[in-house]
Length: 206
Image 1 (tube, helix red, strand yellow):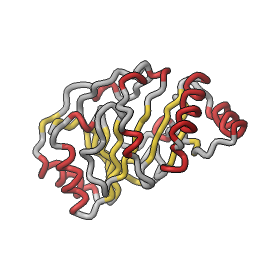
Image 2 (cartoon, helix red, strand yellow; image 1 turned 135 degrees about the vertical axis):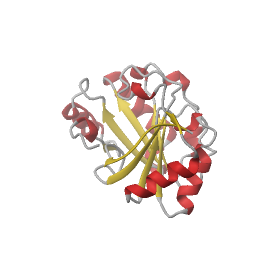
Image 3 (cartoon, one colour; image 1 turned 180 degrees about the vertical axis):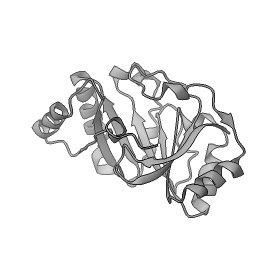
Image 4 (cartoon, one colour; image 1 turned 90 degrees about the vertical axis):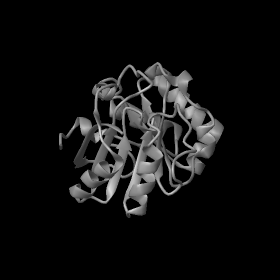
């Protein structure tokens, strides 16, 4: 597998934000979001066999593992890695950009579906079938660039009844949408969603 980096850190996003996590960032991405903060994972990386990846993760001594990218589902071996880690007793979070089918992911894993909004420039690249596959223990994350993104996300949550089917998180793009503003919008509209602050922009633990 083509691996960008493996390291221990504090989880920056999701409902488990703030917990220690073993982060596995796979290289390669099929999208180019305008606000991407991990563009260094677009290419490069190191080719590692699955057993070595699993061994490095075990060596970190953290039971919570985040598999992310880039886009982890671009690599054919990713489902096998997820399954192997689950079989070893790890709790697995898989963060995917929503453009590729999530049906290949072991149902024991927690999917964090990063549903792209228009401000990303990539909203037309989403696989709409993924929203129908989301389960109660999964999460849907909307990263919001501006008020248009907020309206888009709010309407999609309502149309698809997403908040009743899964955990929904609204996060502001760091440096563009103030968290206070997003909090006020959520309260104004009484949305049953979670405000997510991207902790990795405020702490550097690596």
